[in-house]
Image (cartoon, rainbow, N blue to C red; front, side, top):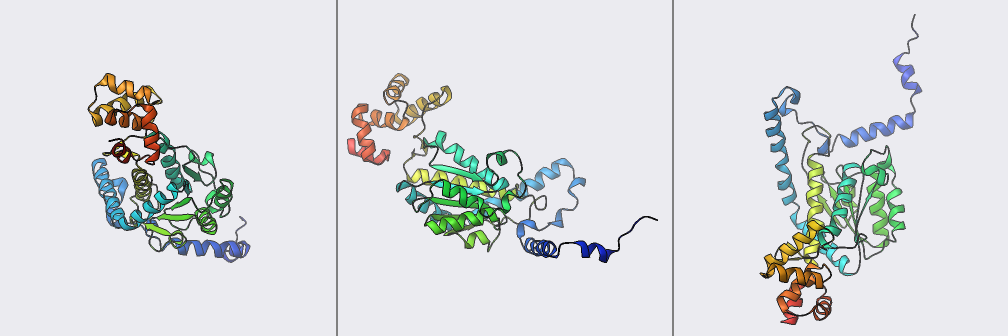
Length: 325
């Protein structure tokens, strides 16, 4: 006869501590809106493809509405980030999995978009750079790793740390936020559940409650979309406050390749009304800086005169134009 194990024998061999921890985690997850199942849609695999597209699109439309409910807190976060930038501080995202990748993506796009130093906006992901492409098991459970990385960056009170976690309970993020608060950095939390642990650990909690996912528990969907939209706001709006745009156009980009050079010349023509030859000449004399070239075209000043005026205006093009006017 086969060797059968009675149910009570199986239970007795299980580590009681592990079993209790698992039960506690199951109970904790059961209260999160992102982990709930929406059974009103029925069996998705039985729906025609067009109906699937429409149903998923309908779910995605809820994300901007949920973000709108957090507008005041997002504005508070933007003002805090801008203030730290003006002190010479940095914006540092921390997250695991999709949340970490969202932060890394936003950080990597800031230099080409706004002409920032690569160290001004930084993305840290649980498990390190390999986790950008591949899943790193258990990395999110390490509550000391983010703090160690932040310590290695020399985090101080002039910096901002933004913790991103759909559940709002990721140990990696909680540990990083705790260390950031300890050193006096400005802290922001982005979660997809109300009353989140990371929200309680941050100066500004941004809790975008998007509800159950289209595929239950797959927080790369609505929660991930919400994270991307919020970090778009945090970086873009703080850059606008720093004068990185003029009349809604990027003016701090650097013409470092053919496409960006063409975009730069087009921007100069669009904003100043200059002829193409004059725009190209100004961009060359400005060393590829669109903002400096614009100031030269608006004021008629040389690069030698315009550059100090722009610096004295803290990079705010409108103020520099007025100063040379």
